[in-house]
Image: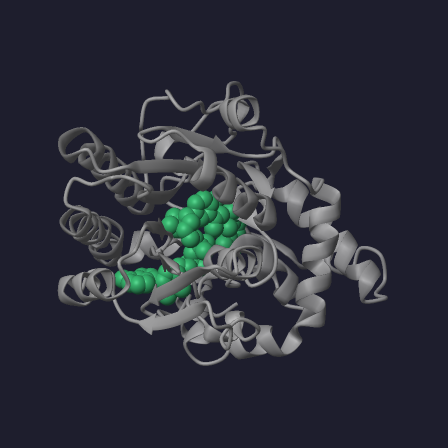
Length: 350
Ligand code: NAD
Ligand code: TYD
């Protein structure tokens, strides 16, 4: 059986990817290496944990010995690398954790693949999952393309940009077979409620203030997580080695517009009075260095590989709200303990 290493498979996107891959490719053995940080949660994978083509390994991608051992034991033909520290606000308070995992961790994996594959790249692929945030911040016009100059502005995006450069360097210097995708903001079930959409849904449930940074005018380009996973599958199987693909569904929304939409959907689904959730909106201090606008041009992926999103923004939002409202136990679990301390630090105990 062919083996693939997935890193960060217990996180938000990773758990969707593991579920998709184990189901779609029963003849591929997926090994999920995850450190189980605050963002990793085995509850996200309950339905796959007993599958014969799935193995979980708890460990750190920075642990060179462990990573080498895994390559020796499983003889991976592919790597899908998602493990990362992923939240911009946390990168502002603790940048070193991002440098450690996102840069050193990626370098450790690249080195292990290079050693194990030893110049033989037949049927091998190192797939690096990255973000559109490496391109920096757009003004009112324009879109990020694959040739947009890198201009990261947060410790998170700078660490991801650095990891992208390392991946390309291993391609050019050592001939390591790599591919990179840079995706826009994802949304869907199983996202840790430090990120805007699940945080807002959770706070509405509890009648808590909905913190909107600055004037709420920043724009993000939203993509349903299942469509990102479908893009990763397509690029993994059909993408050109050494290439980069942007992934995004042309769903640009100002934060305030998105928060108000969520308010309307959740109020309706909970049978609350119209406007009840909106009255919870609270403008708070802006994020330091807050990127104004992200917007992705995914034309290359659409044109060369035939990808297109399967879910409209409206459908995706409905599905997402339904998921959080019907998975209260999951939300309650991940928002107990540590989460409360994070929340108090970040939002000043509001
Ligand atoms: P997440 O924070 O939900 O999950 C990250 C996972 O990585 C967790 O399971 C965590 O335990 C694990 N992890 C963290 N440090 C680790 C380490 N040192 N060793 C092993 N495992 C470790 O993140 P996500 O939102 O699912 O993002 C996954 C990837 O996709 C990241 O690389 C991120 O940069 C990229 N990405 C995310 C988005 C988005 O909107 N969420 C968009 C584009 C790209
Ligand atoms: P987030 O979900 O953290 O994703 P990213 O920073 O990677 O884009 O934030 C999405 C947008 O929402 C971003 O512009 C910051 C803003 N935001 C708020 O206004 N309030 C919040 O409490 C959070 C977490 C984010």
